[in-house]
Amino acid sequence: MITLDCAQLSDEWFSARAGNPGASSFDKIITTKGAPSKQAHLYMCELAAEAITGVKTEGYTNDAMQRGIELEPEAIEFYEFAKGVTVERVGLCYKDEDKKFHASPDGLIGEDGLIELKCPMSKTHVSYILDGKMPTAYFQQVQGQLLVTGRKWVDFMSYYTGLKPFIIRVEPNKEFHKALSAQLDQFAYALAATIRELKGK
Image (cartoon, rainbow, N blue to C red; front, side, top):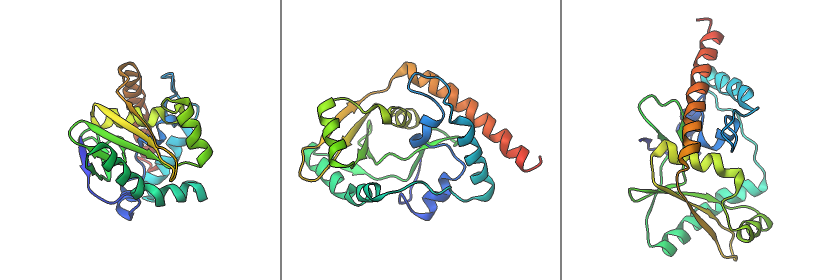
């Protein structure tokens, strides 16, 4: 694993992500079943444009998402106290020197772990607690983080002030990782070819 030490949401962080597939968007490349996603082509077009212009496409944000960003330090502090650990913040993680794709986990824990934090609306948080399992919506992201970093586990945590947190430990799904690796290689190859075509080379 190779890390880029910069603050998440900084100009350097956005610049490094431009044109490079990230774990938070791996669901646009592969489904939970390991099949190619129908969103892959448009996502590739988006990344190709970013790679050439150097400008990261603006993502959708709303009040709930902004609230989540503001709550993150509080949630991290809670997790550190509850688990008796120190969370090491990191900008970007790459699997290897090729840097064909990346992950931006919310923190590294020791030598083996990661934390992925969500601060959703109260009703969503309660639904996570009642379901008692890893939310399917984040399956590709979390498994992608494990693939990129080579870590042994991710603690997925949902946090809402005044309610008990939801924390579940997720380990690598080896079968999914095989499919994900294959799809990422194919996607990266197609992306590079698209960029060359757009540059007229």
